[in-house]
Length: 69
Image 1 (cartoon, rainbow, N blue to C red):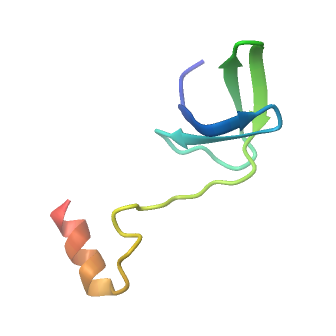
Image 2 (tube, rainbow, N blue to C red; image 1 turned 60 degrees about the vertical axis):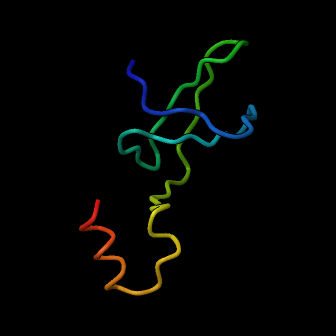
């Protein structure tokens, strides 16, 4: 099994949040190694977010930021 991401924030037996390094699709399963053993989770939602562009409100500024990366 390969690592797909890192758990962030509070992890509960019924719900986790993680940052993925590759695409993870809704409906896929992921496992998390915990102190109590391996736990299986179903991916129920996926959000793609750009922190860099979260405050940008117009297309021209967004394109300038994209080209500057």
